[in-house]
Image (cartoon, rainbow, N blue to C red; front, side, top):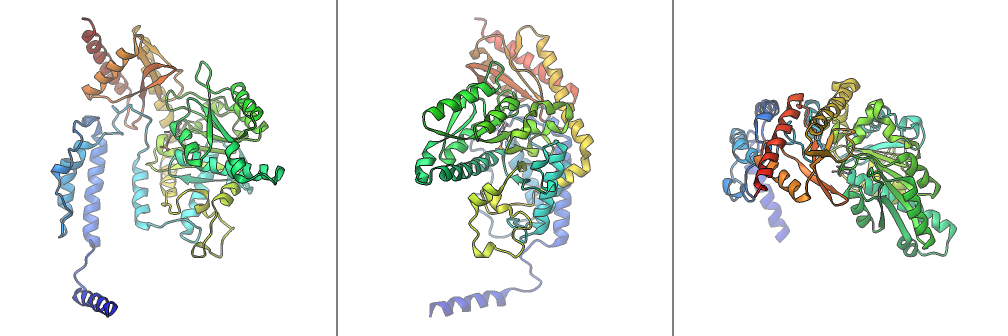
Amino acid sequence: MASNKALEESLEILKGAKIDESIDMEAPEFKDFAKEMVDYIANYLENIRERRVLPEVSPGYLRPIIPDEAPIKPESWQAVMSDIERVIMPGVTHWHSPKFHAYFPTGNSYPAIVADMLSGAIACIGFSWIASPACTELEVVMLDWLGKMLDLPEEFLACSGGRGGGVIQGTASEATLVALLGAKAKKLQEVKKEHPDWEDSVILSKLVAYTSAQAHSSVERAGLLGGVRFRLVEPDENFQMRGEALEEAIKRDIEDGLIPFYAVVTLGTTSACTFDRLDECGPVGNRYGLWVHIDAAYAGSAFICPEYRHLMRGIETADSFNFNPHKWLLVNFDCSAMWLKDPTWLVNAFNVDPLYLKHEMQGSAPDYRHWQIPLGRRFRALKLWFVLRLYGIENLQAHIRRHCGFAKQFEGLVLKDPRFEIVAKVQMGLVCFRLKESNELNEQLLKSINSRGNVHMVPSKINGKYFLRMAVCSRFTVSEDMEYTWNEVKAATEETLANNKH
Ligand SMILES: *Cc1c(COP(=O)(O)O)cnc(C)c1O
């Protein structure tokens, strides 16, 4: 019989295996390998400014320099180590170089790297409390620590004894979607109470969400994924969404028979780091029964410094708040902190609860699987714990303040040159600037800067105006780096202007 034959074959394999012939890497070898890697990492990071920030490889560079197939026999770890410089590094964009000014920063620090090693060793999947109690419990407490550091209202904190609490999502995009789904479930229930005869599909087709035209693309995408329409509200001349404009949009939709249910307010837009007026938009959202979600992905880290908290005035009106410690708080990706005043809407919306996931302690601690989209989750609270303890609030504040100071320094250099203008108020670690010339010339300028390869920036465009973004990203940045970057901009400007003389 076929099944007997398979069984015999399996037993045969077991007989062949000798006790002393391990198929795994053994501990002594792991220790050597890992120690070598720690040395490599420290050397890489300490000397990162010597590397060309942008790689010079062309698409498809990698395939020809490694074998077409995986090895049959194991290789040595030394062989793997020696391929890092040959295969990987030529194709790395060095995000932690002080010469990297593109996008926004992404976090990186030694404590976070070490914590990720431990997370990799424990390698639990913390979807419920019993699946690894420390994973859930440390996350609950870390989100309280962090919430207190930002001076979030009590209602968001688990330690307040209310319903509220925090969770680590993978990304801000997920937080926006999760909040939208919670808001959708909540509004559906409210409307059904009022109109028991309305079908779900009818109600869902009337739902409408709001955000600024300056919001991150992931907000609009949350609408697509969640199957609801988003209304993009025009910001004012300072690129901030205002309460009046939001209210007008809501009123118009109500008149048209639609059901407003969700608003995303951005604190620190990606384009130009501008701040929607939460103090105006929040109360409007509350008045019309909308779920107010705050996307502070980048700028939220700055709220650990009291002097920036005026930018989150109105925070008490929010239903959920999110920012990325993995952007500006020295925690390696992925770690997106989200707080909810009342997570029961999510828990109810996402609860499926099959038998194999049930446990006796259900209800006494959060089962984070109900707070997120995937089932599986890493032990991410460890890196927060390590970073918060090994830096201390003081040094994290110093990190934010230094970056904001560098941006101010760069702004000063730009303003001294009459050929340039500043596009948006410099409030954090981002400077938006342009030549007082055509978009085309500014596009050429950026191309020239990036093709010189010494510093890296990306552009943005608001109301048809193209500009360059200089984001302070690296924890290794010093004042001289700002001068270096400005000199690169000036050299590229000479090139660009010379090319356009004829
Ligand atoms: C970076 C950013 C996002 C996206 O963050 P992810 O964590 O990558 O999803 C969303 N909103 C704003 C304002 C951002 O700056």
